Length: 288
Image (cartoon, rainbow, N blue to C red; front, side, top):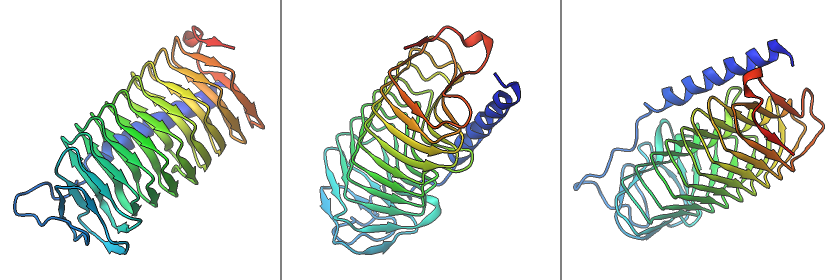
């Protein structure tokens, strides 16, 4: 093992945590207020969605984004473009459940979609471009994130204290900043990340970090990431990394925690190590 390279990975992980915490102070939408206008088919900045809604396709500049303010509804953007504020969220939801967000084209927000304390929602068939985070879930369990596309977002999905979510069949291109992971988990457990196609990023494809346990990462296609395809870090245990295809990256898989399972992955054309176990204490993992 190369101690200098391991030290550099640890520094990058510390910077990533700082970035995650720092961006948590980004302003949300203007919130759900009784005097806010209903969005209706032509959304205006800061409007609220309180019923199932289909937007008329157009290019909408929404500096304050929009808020979802009801359960058991469908927001269908109909392909409409929503843009843009570097310190705001595009679509914001708090304490919502059983809601569907689909067919939105969300560009250049701090967070494209931000859900807090919001279980059992579906985010599907959306496009994201140039956002800080495309999708950010905080304390939100049991959501499905599927069939979305991302181009040039710094982080595509971040789970923060969020469990039992499914991230499936998304297509990501050129995602991730120089210290970011395209898909990242922080203190988030029992999630499934599967069948995603991830092409090109400056840093990491998938990062499981800081007390994130019992996650399953399988059948993902991960290529052309500058640092590592998949990493497990900081006291994250009982995660399963299986049947992924990782190619053209600095490292294939980096393990910096105990009691994880790494099986049946195909790792090709790696600059440094296919699998790196970073540190003598972390030898209690299973590799097949």
